[in-house]
Image 1 (tube, rainbow, N blue to C red):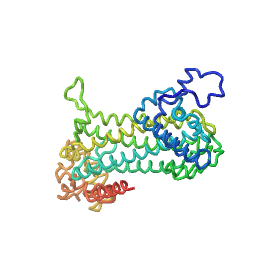
Image 2 (image 1 turned 180 degrees about the vertical axis):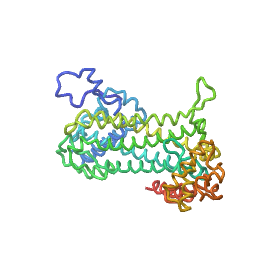
Image 3 (image 1 turned 90 degrees about the vertical axis):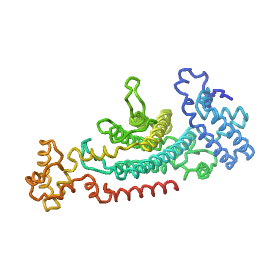
Length: 467
């Protein structure tokens, strides 16, 4: 089966298209991705034409059977669609119908334009893509929650400016990324709610002249409602922008996770080791174990942000209503969603097989005077105003640096030289585990709070699976 290659608009023109123009203009090479959605919309349109008195029930049945066969053929050999000589996916479907059904195949496009057709197809595709990304997000979140539960007793140096700050639980670090990805899920859900309108029946720009029940068409295609304005419906790509914005921010979060894991796995840190299955080696240096999976996650974000920038620039100066510029909406969307899907799915095995060096993490949690804040808090509990305590401890840190010792290695007499209120229990106060346990507030890193956060995240996952 192949397309005739004849344009759906050719009768007004007296000469064939220039081959260069065809190459520049035709979109079948990428919009073949929409073939299933185009067929789904076409079946719904055939049903609508029956209700409008344009088609008989028997004609609609024949069209639906032919469209179903086309869908099966396209699924079995998508390359054949992509490499056909059709102008676009809509032309491919219509030409194939005409080959099979003759004049009946030409009746399906009654009252419909490629403008409302592609707007509907792209919403259908985006809806499916968003649902898939949300499922992948939940899998990544579940992997991080599992990691948090597995490392509930592991203490890690929390950092700001990539400098050691205060001890935290490794679980608390993992759950920080759970929060980011949960917000990403919410953004995709918001985009899905606004996407949930059906443009079919809007025609080229002014609506259709046939008595189409657009509410029923929308319901058949699984949309909440039809679009309210035909001009807006055929030219709106807000749903593409929102989908890509959610994808871009999600990719940024994954890139931050990847960066942390890359740093944590380096020789300078050695907190974690990634499994052989998600790393690679060097062609020259036999000892190397490179975090390629996470480096690619970090790298892919550029393509996804670029896709968002592309569609915003395409839209910024378009007059109402449809313009051919909108053909540039698909490749960035398809690519960005595909790359984000890979990145999300790559996070799961990377996190699930991560080996954490608990002893190394704990040792590092005590380096860099991460207990300085604890020493200041000790003085606060002894009645010293925090600003004064901060100043005292700053001098203690300077003294410890000069002696090349951690604070806890200083003699009690040395500490009392800075403030006489330091007592013998100060050493227990300075232990990383004690510092973590004292952060016992909502959202803090204390074990009790982190356990509760893990339970809450699991409850959220369970509810999300049922929704």
